[in-house]
Length: 227
Ligand SMILES: Cc1cc2nc3c(=O)[nH]c(=O)nc-3n(C[C@H](O)[C@H](O)[C@H](O)COP(=O)(O)O)c2cc1C
Image (cartoon, rainbow, N blue to C red; front, side, top):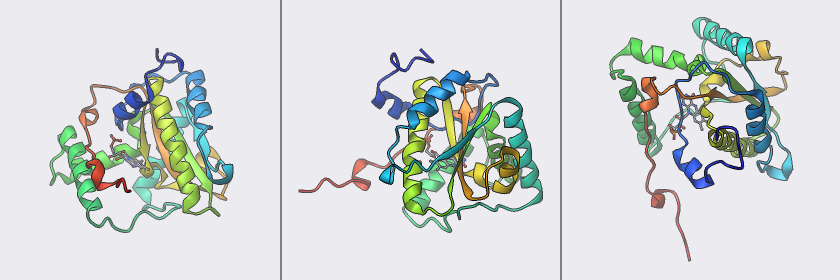
């Protein structure tokens, strides 16, 4: 079933079972499957149909080269994202953030005061959690938050399309922490800013981090039906 779109599970079951996977098997995803995933995501909506996503999908030696460049940058420089990270998370967002971090560290068996363990967990981001593929996602720097909305629509399309074909993912803003290093390896032009990366591959169920489950607020916290 892995590679057949027609025989895939229903949309709502894919939506409900998608989660971030942070530990992958070394087995690569067939090129045709990756093309199906990204080909389907081309259908994502965007304002005036500008389709602003620009994407580099790695495999093999190129994945290793990108990871090596990011690990080297992480050892030698501070974060220099092309698009500023949120300066703060006020409530109620802070609480969600804490719960999500707590669930991940608990799954990994990393204690709150274990500084070395937390650092090691953070560094795993730059290894893309050992995924065989990384999709690096950039947009033209001249665009603003509306193009980011377009990118969000596209991103979720990729995550759900991937799972439909049995491919697990983790969206990672952390993969855009050292854009200079990534740009050099992939040849991403300067006029494009790096926004996010996606770790992609087949889930390794033996990795503890993959036991992490997040929750969602009740619908009424986010949506009001009026009239
Ligand atoms: C834009 C974006 C950036 C993210 N960046 C990271 C990241 O850098 N590292 C990470 O481990 N997870 C990252 N995540 C995954 C979120 O932590 C995850 O989606 C959230 O906690 C909900 O959990 P779930 O995806 O398992 O449902 C990111 C997700 C999104 C949508």
